[in-house]
Amino acid sequence: MKYIPTDTEQLIVKEDPNNVITIILNNPQHMNALSEELTPYLRKTLKNINKDNKHKLLIIRGAGKAFCSGGNIKKMLVKKSVKVNKSFAEKVSSLNKKQKELTGMLYNIKIPTLAVITGACAGAGFSLALACDLRLGNRDAFFISNYSKIGLSGDYGISWFLSRLLGESKSKEIMFLNNRIYCKEALHLGLLNLLIEKNFEKEVKSIVDILCSQSTIALKYIKKNIMLSKDSTLNKSFKYEAEHLIKCSQTKEHKIAVSKFKKK
Image (tube, rainbow, N blue to C red):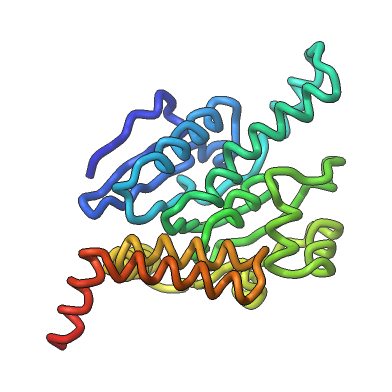
């Protein structure tokens, strides 16, 4: 296992021999809140991963008993007590840039992304999980918006992610009422792809092994096809799929996979 320096103890990044990269939000005393110390390095890490073509899979998880509680509310109060001479437009521009470089970058990363949820997943942490391709959870996993409880309307793409996954009405319910969505309901809704109730780490590793056994190039193009389909006609999707399948068929990975399949 290789550890990648991040210049903060609040973020651990490691890479295994199979080119799986794991990001651990490491601020458990504050439920892995997205602090101003943690998030700049998280953005930088995501940017570096997106530029590097060697990785097969990205896993993101939290240390301790939470995934991520979102923003640090106590720090927000301290910031508001300090006057910052920025215009409305400057504040909007700054937040917009931060959102694009965090959940925007995570959502658009070419390789498959996996969120491992072992407890609270709230606020911007909820957005972070939704930006991943797959979400695995244990019996302690739960989701909650919390934005309107503190007089805020939501950020980091939560309205976009939720409404596309669950539809407008359910998204409004989740964000208006702020009810905790526990693991079994989360699985039923699709917030969790898999609920693992026993041998959690062993089962997570099994899922990771399955993903790593697939063609990296094929998974990248599958992800791209699905993402492009949201704004495409069926005929456009035919074209994208044809282009990407032909590209896959010309790779060494495809030839090796076919050879292995024939030997079974």
